[in-house]
Image 1 (tube, rainbow, N blue to C red):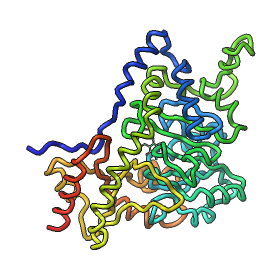
Image 2: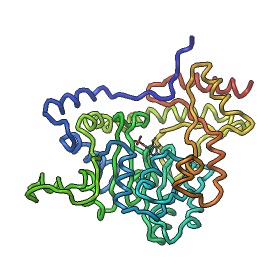
Image 3: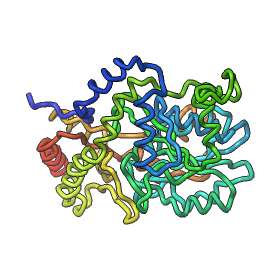
Image 4: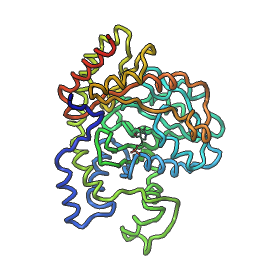
Length: 378
Ligand SMILES: Cc1ncc(COP(=O)(O)O)c(C=O)c1O
C-alpha cells in the first residue's frame, strides 16, 4: 500500500516540551506569565503592532475585536463570504448584520472595488481576510474606511510571516487577528492573538482580555482591588499554550522558508497544466509577500472536484476543498445579506482544491504533482 500523504502535519520544533516543563517548574500555569510576555514581545517586534494579546484562538481574537468596536444590534459589518465561520460569527454574536461582498478573481480576497457600494449609514467596519497569507488590497481598503469613517479589522488567521508592502498582515487595520491553530504555519494547538494597531484601543483591550476586570491595574498596584469594569471574557490562554508557542514563534522564518520551497515546487511543476488550461494556480500580486500557508489549484469546470479528490485519495493523497460560502449557509441567511451577486465566491467554492503542504514533505510533493498530472491527463 502507498504511504499516506496527509493534507497537514503539524510541525514541532523539538523545544516545546522543554519550555512547557520550564513553565511548570516555575509554577506558572494560568495566563499572563513569563511565556505569555515573551510571546507578546516577540509578536510586537515581529509584526510592528502596537500591542499583542495572546488568545485561545483567532476566533477569540475576532470576538475581542467585535467587543472593542462596540458592535451592537443594527450595525453592519462588511466582509467576504469566502471565509471561515468565525470571521462572521464574532460580529453576529454582538448583533451585527453581516454584509457580504464578492472576492477578487486573482487573490480570492474581498474585492475592494465592490466595498463602497456595500457601505450604508449603519456600516461600522470592514473585515478583510488575507486568504492563503496573500494580502487584500489594503491601501485602497484603508482609504475607503477612512473616508467613510469606519473601522478595519484584519482576519490574518493565515497571515503569520506574510506582508503587504513590507507591512506584516494584521498590523495595518485598527485591529488584526492571528491564528496558531495546528493547521496554521506557526502553532500552539489551539491559539491566536489580537494585534492592536490603534493605541486608543489598548486600555480597553486589557480589560476585555481579563474578563472585563481591571486586574492588570491591580497587579501593578495601581488599584486596591480589582473589579468588573467592562464587558469581557476569559480570552487569555494558560502558560502551557504560550510555552508551546514561544519556540514556534522563534522558528517562524525557517518554517516559512520550508513551506515556500514546497509551494514553489508545486507552482513550477504544475505550470504546464495551467498553460494547457486545465487549472489555475495561485496568483501573488507584486505588493504581497506570502507565507506559503496554502497551495491551491482551481480546476476548470470541465473537471468534477469530488471525483478528483476521490481519485487522489485512491493514491493515499489527501487533498481538501475549502470554505462553504457563508452567505448561503443556514446561519448566514439568518445573520447577513449579500451586497450583490457573489459570482466569483460561488465559482471558487465549487472548484478550489488545497494540496498537502507541510514542513518535511520533501519528495512527497513530487508524488502529488505526478498524481495530479496522471488524473488530469487521463
Ligand atoms: C480566515 C479564518 N479566520 C478565522 C479562523 C479561526 O481560527 P481559529 O481556529 O484560531 O479560531 C480560521 C481558521 O481556519 C480562518 O481560516
